[in-house]
Image (tube, rainbow, N blue to C red; front, side):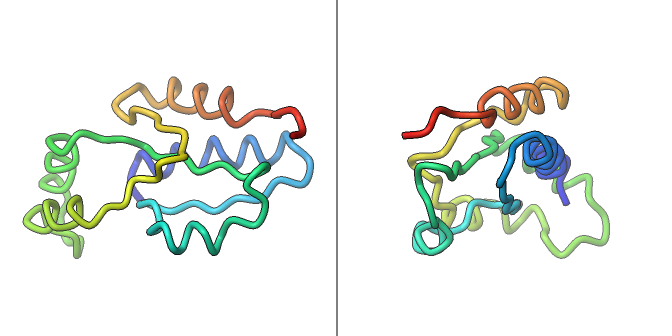
Length: 114
């Protein structure tokens, strides 16, 4: 699991612990739109989060990995296939981990009923 995904998971889990009747789906890449539609049960209560990372930082992280199936040479094709969720909360994942978690907790906190 990438560091960004781990931080998202931590923040989402903390939020889930604080809010009643909260569910969580964590993924390292946003599912394609067709899957998001199928996974959305109650759009008024669900929220997609997209951790936005610059290509250069992704390449740097991939190049630093050893023994992982995802090689840096595959990055451009993966980014080309990426379907960025239009309705997602977009968070710049270049922020410090504590800032990411604080942003997610603030943005994913209790929302008024529709």
